[in-house]
Every structure is written in C-alpha cells, then in structure tokens.
Image (cartoon, rainbow, N blue to C red; front, side):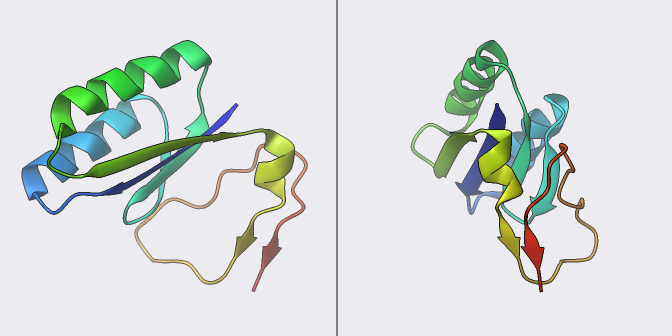
Length: 97
C-alpha cells in the first residue's frame, strides 16, 4: 500500500531524525514535510513506532495509507527544486498543472 507521511516539527534535530527514518524505509521526499512510498503493513507499523520514539509530543506526524489507484488520481501543481519527483507506481491518472 502507498504510505504518505506528513509532519510538522519545528525542532531541527527532531525533523532531521524523522526525515532520516523515512528515507531509511525507502520513502521519497516529495515536499518539505511529506514523504511517500510503498510500505508493507509491518514496515509501516515499525516506522510508526520509530517515529513515536523520536517525536513524542514535540511535533505532529500523520501516516496515511492509500491504494495505488487512489494515489494515481492525485493532482499536483508545481514542484519544489531539490525534492524527489512523485514516484510512478504504474497506472497514473494524475493531473499536473
């Protein structure tokens, strides 16, 4: 399943640790506070636990799950240089403006 990790963390040290964990799981950094990729349920739960141990109450992290069809229906406007492209996982229906 597609896994979307969204966070709002003001502490640089904690934010860097969250980004490092997401990258370790192979997630793509597509925006400043957004990672996406395919994770198994087990990996998603492991990532959740590792992020819980890092963040606690010092920020906000949300992990969303969606299937590839719903991911393919995403809409995008623009792109920020220095970040990963949206991954292509097959059937893309998305609109880029």
